[in-house]
Length: 269
Image 1 (cartoon, rainbow, N blue to C red):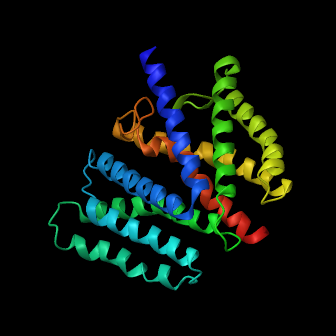
Image 2: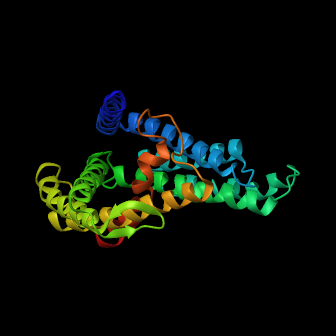
């Protein structure tokens, strides 16, 4: 009971802070997701150290932060991509920095450091383009995506617990079922109609496509994070959220869905 209460309270406060930060102002959005970026990178690099890898934790976090900030400033002040492009040399210095570390597996260290930036920072960086999609800041698209993720996760859990018989990917995640996946997809699809009506910004067709992207790629993101944790032998990526694990555990679906959503909107909107 205590664990259920802790999990519920943490989840409620987390959602409250997330929604408030997204809707209140562009700066609250930037500060929150910059913090999420730093914590998620730290979690990824920390669990990677349980293998033979010794990622560049501090430098990786600095580069990830500068890339996110460059994306926000570029979009907030409509500077184009020039500032973002300036961050490219910082990535090259991941290789240079490894020259001076004298660790046994330099290629592995470089690979894990870059993997963290690609896996965590790139999707969060792209959020800047979604919230400034019409040049002016609006958190409605991002809020709609989060609602679809939450609805999909809730539907997958409810349908999985009550009707789950056929395992979706038993080797990686024994509890996930096809029934849960389809139940989550059904609820997300239905929610796209309400989101289109009450949030607007995009028409119904786009929200339906986004709901499908969230279900498919959000599930894949969840499975990939499970694969990473299973290969290392851990249950959670961190302990920052009591009853929920780490930041990576809460954002694994978003990290996979956002690049696909961004690509879709870029080409079809």
